Length: 228
Ligand SMILES: CSCCC(=O)C(=O)COP(=O)(O)O
Ligand SMILES: [Mg+2]
Image (cartoon, rainbow, N blue to C red; front, side, top):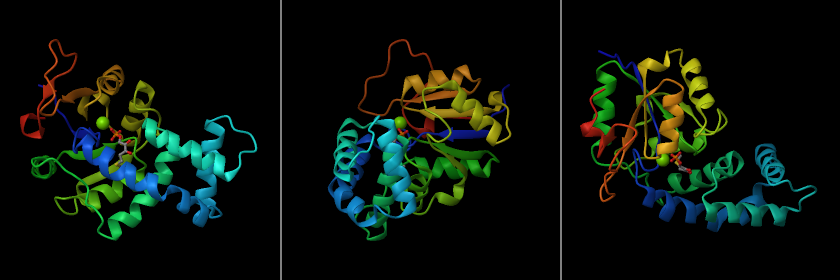
């Protein structure tokens, strides 16, 4: 009998719908990004991420307008750039605080997270969204403030989600052996990477997606089906 001591969960496609991220969060950031960069571009934190974006794109001596266009392109491509995600998170903060939207959570998720906490499991998030964006997401969720349920948050500053080394770093950071950890995601390449690091895995295949014929990972329709 394997003892799971902590669960690490992805957000988009796992706790929450892809549609919410694609149809609400991304357009919100896209619309406001040019003005945000113009207004806040001299603040050290914003400057840092604009610089990181330019480095990532191999742009030397990029003008501010070039970086804005680059970032808009990356939003359209859903590029999992750490710099873009950090900037998006700063923009989303205003939307949450103004009550323009609340973060989507699948209906069973909050109750299961609470049950798992009550059973003594520790809960963590690992998402491409920046850590501040993850905290905002669960603080302003449709199911209320869920942020206190999580013991920690990880983003791509820990490493890319499709590389096993990232999962080794997470295990080390939370001081737990991978064989006691369960990673939940909707993306099979992320699950492959987690398994290569020794994690247990759960593949969320939400309705109406078809169930895979020969899945490489245990498949769950929702969190109700998971018994860690
Ligand atoms: C913190 S929510 C923002 C979601 C986001 O930007 C994203 O790229 C989600 O990726 P995930 O790793 O959660 O699938
Ligand atoms: Mg996902």
